[in-house]
Length: 557
Image (cartoon, rainbow, N blue to C red; front, side, top):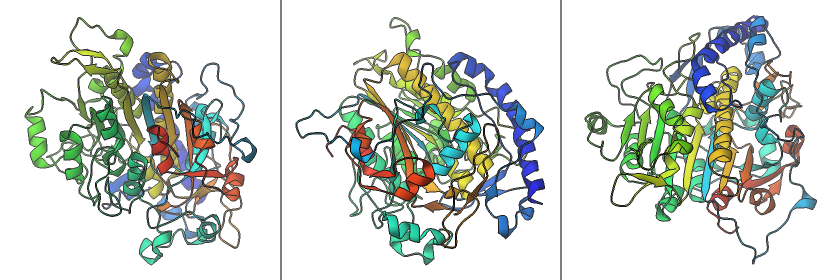
């Protein structure tokens, strides 16, 4: 029965691969030869509640017995032979695996040493992607669990502890608690409740630990200064793009403040109206459903309110913002690269951009089971490139013309639907979303090399927290997996099992390149988790997520 279940999933995956090639071919040829489109899978998704828990109703779910719950992989079909031949190795990049930090190589920066100050920061978050998600996707796409280009030299790598204010990461205690990952949150002690995207997003964007549910608000109810506010103070430009709901917690944490993440309409209003973001792109269009079909306007929790939407529709903000709602309009801006800028002509990119993809909850993840990719939805790479092309310029004083931006910029690029796939324990959909995310990473790095430099720009690739605890299929008597996923090579899904159906406190990987990247591995180590190191082939060192903020903003340890 399980074999039949997997074959149905692989057959659907292979069929949809062909569709995505047709949909994305024009964009890719205009972007870079190194950036090729990926693939799709089939599942029926709907939003369940305010905590971004997604229920995916698989066609064959009745065949997935309790004994093999959460297990995937090892199968192949003829359609998988048609999978996109994509390598994430950059031209001229070394193919040897990246040399991780180790105890005898830690270099502590002296107090008199100058702290690197990134001019531009691009933070790329695969929401809910732990080591298992990164490695399973890498193996499927490249044939190696550490085969993605950002897992190679000269990128730096370590891991991150993501716990909230009332918790901790204790190696022995947390591994002892592994067997309880599927225990409902209300039955856990507060210290063992995993983080949510509000607390992790706030830690990454402000450098302060807070309680679950809080966005931009500290543990003592204080309003925290976000990274976009800091960049705006120094004359920089800022943006945030996601493949998920436009005012979901990670997006909102860049620029908004509320003690309750569920107040998404208020968070969106602050993001849009308070002047700390120049680019906002995501899903959550009131007038479209999850399949990209028009409907009577529905005003969901993590998007514009009915009142604000009416003003946007009426052009009330047209002097300050350009509004886009189609893939074609976003792609057009993605193609307007800085080298095409003409000072004497009309602005070739908008001054500020609000873009809502014509879908309700995500670019692709919520579409019906068995349906092809939505041709109307942009890719995450397109949204990232559109944002970068806008942030590369800034308005002239006293008029609407643009000039090159010399004040720097901050951009969040979030693969937000990875978390939804892992909520549902759907490894196929997880790998699909990770492929879209990795395409965006490749596109961003191409842009940096062509229109900026690694001496000015810091790119960070990480997750806000783990979801699903993806490991190999067999566990010991203590409930701890015996192995990492069993990798099958390029084009074949690894044999893997989900050990949780929600967020966990597991460490997540972080990769960085550019100015200040080495600080993540040389200055901020909080501890070593040797078991994690053994599972995932690195030295086990980890930092706190608040250290990421310090590196992005050039602050001391």
